[in-house]
Structures are given as structure tokens and as C-alpha cells.
Amino acid sequence: MKKILLFAVVAICLMACGNEPNATIVVDGLEYTLNYETKTAEVSALKERRGNGNRNLKEANIQEYVRYNETDYIVVGIKAGGFQRCIALQYVYIPNTIKYIGEWAFADCPSLKRVIIPNEVRCIEEATFNRCVDLESVVIGENVTVIGREAFAECSSLQSVKFSDKLTNVYEAAFYSCESLQSLFVSKSVKSIGEYAFGGCSGLTSIIVDEENPVYDSRNNCNAIVETATNVLKVGCRNTVIPNDVSRIGSGAFRECSGLTSVTIPHSVVSIGSGAFAESDVDSVTIEEGVVEIDFGAFAKCQELKSITIPNSVTHIDDCAFRECVSLQSISILGDVEYIGILAFEKCESLRSVILPNSVFLIPGSAFSGCASLESIALPNSLSSIQESAFSGCASLTSITIPNSVTFIGGDAFEECIGLTTVTCYAVTPPTMSTHEKNPIGSVQRVFSGVSCSKLTLYVPTESVEAYKNAKQWKDFGTILPL
Image (cartoon, rainbow, N blue to C red):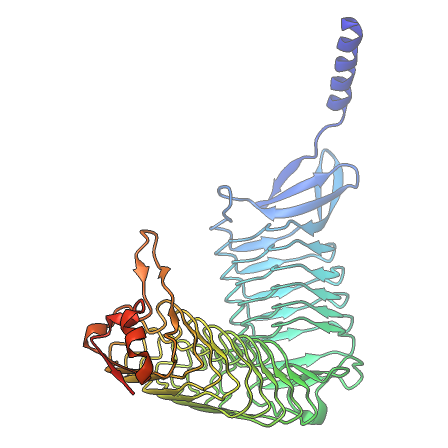
């Protein structure tokens, strides 16, 4: 039995030795991996050390064929990550034999300036040229049908791109933050454009969709890409005029759009998508009656925006909707808003006053945190809960009036509101005051953390004075008087 097993092991070893592994050869400083079976080869740069590119490679002339042991191998592919982090690479010649370019193949090549992608390539994979910050122009082969996710993201010098007439899909963030891209022409073949595909392209001034495109249009010369079937505006620029029949502003449609100073959102729009105007230069926004929802971060970090009126039709203001709008001084919410998200107005440092409608029943966590200039806020009689850190750091608040409908106030709700002198609470039963552990050592944070409550005056209903004097945290106020 042992002899039979020994014979089998020897046989397997001989078979393995007969199948010589694919070789790797170096030609003109580039590494080619050969496939004996298909007589093809993949190319990459010689890596200096694991995980890093070749810092000295300035030019890459990829061969059409390489020869090994008197056999020619056709070079058909560029390896995934093959030239990634080749920080000195300025020029690459890609021959017509190349049929595929792997993911991240030229990512983080900050010196690469121009690329011509041959006609045999069908797909530009994910992040292929991501963060090639000096890349100025790209000619895309006529048979490319797909541009992958983040394929050219953060190519901040990219000024022009010529799409093939066979291009069908542009995936998410494909050209995100290509700040120098000035014009965009969408060919008739394009069927799908992912979210944020052109988000952050702050230099865009002209957008045109081929009139024969069955999926998208730029109706009435609006300088935007509109999805025809849904009327969703997918991509805009500083010169966009939003058409009166658009139903939604898509996610990131105007994100980081410099030069966009004024915008009117027509009555046909039902929702403003996540990040739609985030980090843009907009300083004046007119939202017409009809908008129902302002999505996550829709106007976040619009640092020039000074005031905004939310119309009666709006019922939903999502998380971070106006976060870090540092110039925003006033906001009027006119309608029956049912939901205000966490961090919705966080760090709006210039915000002085807020009027909330009677439809609001909860102020969520950190909704107005860091609004250091906030002097007054009218809390509605519908309000039942003020969540943790809701007004944390509102140092200019001198007084706060809590309506009788409030039953709960979260930890740190009024943390570091150091300007407070009086608090008025109309609730007959003292609202429950929460505490929470803010740091790993377990220090308990109270509703008025950082505020000298012993120096404040609290006004409460006459019949409730004793109840407040015995209630947790409420009893810490120096003076408790009847209304």
C-alpha cells in the first residue's frame, strides 16, 4: 500500500514539473507576465517595494508583443494597479493590442498629463485614473461602452474628454471633482449616468445632450442633464436654468459648483436630493411652493448662503441639510414640517434667529449645535422632546422658553450655553432630564453641562415650583420662581 501511495505522489510531482509556471520578464523597465496557454501578456511597472509604485519611471512605452524562448506573446492587458503610484510618470503609450486596463491601473500618478485609450478597450474600470491631478486630456477609444466608478475622480486638471459614440454607462463619481472640466457633451448612446458622476466639477459652464438621446435631454437649452422619463435633473452647472417641469434635483447635481450664486427651484420640484447644492457658491436660494423634501446635506457647507425661507409645502428637512452654512443668518420655516434631521443646522455660526412651526414635535440631536450667534429660537407648542446636544454651544442664547408640551430633554441639550441668564419652562410636570456618558472614563454629562445653573433664574408654573425644586437637575438652578 505504501509503494502505491509513493508511486502516486511521484507521478503528481512529475506532472507538476511538466507544467512550467507562467514567466515574468522585463523589457525596457516594464514587467510582462506571460500566459503560456493563450500566448498573451499583461504589463505593469516594476515595483520598488510592496505596495508602492516606481518613483523613477517617467515614460512607459508598452510593447505590442514581447518575445520569450523564441515565442511571441501579444500584450493584451494592463494589470490592476499596474502603474499605481508611479509618481513621476508623465507619458504612457498604450498600443492598439491592449483590450483591457485593470482597476486602479494608473491611480495616483500625479504627473501623468495625457492618455489615449485604444479602440480595443471596452471598459474603463473602477478608479483607473483616480487622482491623476495633472491629467489634462483623455481620448477615449471608440469602442468604450462603460466608464467605471471613480474612473477619473479628482483629476483636477482634466479640461476635456471625448466620449465614444458607443458609450452607454457612466458610473457613480466617474468624473467627481474634475474641477477644470469646462464643457460636457452627452452622446446619444449614453443610457445610464450614476450619482455624483460629475459632482464637484466646479468649472463646468456648458452641458449639452445629443437631441437623439432617448434617455437624457438638456431641454430648452437649460445647460443641464435631465432624465427624460422621470424629469430628474442629474447634472447642473453655474449656467443652469432649472426647467419648470423638473420633478427632482438629483444627488450632487450642483455639488461644489463655483460661480453658482443664485438659484430658483421651481414649483414642479418635489424633492432636493442629497448633497444637491453642497459646497457650492450659492448665496441666494428661492424655493417655490411644491417642494416637499430637502434631503441629506442638500445645502451643507454653502458658505455664502445668508438666508433661506422654507415654504409651506416642505414636510421633511433631512440630516445635515444646512450643516456648516457659516454665513446663514436667518431661516424661516413656514409650513408643516414634520421632521428635522440630526445636525440639520449644526455649526451655522452666523445664525441669529429661528422660527419653528407648530408641526415640529422633536428637535433631534445636535440640530443647532455650534450655532454660536443664535440669540433667539421660538420653540413650538407641539414640541415634546429636545434631544441630546440639540443646542450645544449656542453661546449667545440669553434665554430659552420651553413650552408645556415638552416631556424630555436629552443630555448636553444646552451644553456650554454660557450666555443664558433665564430659563422659562411652562410644563406643569418637570420634563425628564437625561444624562449620558460622553467619554471613556464615564463622566456624566448633564442637560446644562458647562453652564453655572446656580446663577440662573428658572421660571415655572406656580403650582409646580416645589416639584421643580425636588426634580433631578432642575433643582440645581439658583433661583426658581413662579411665572
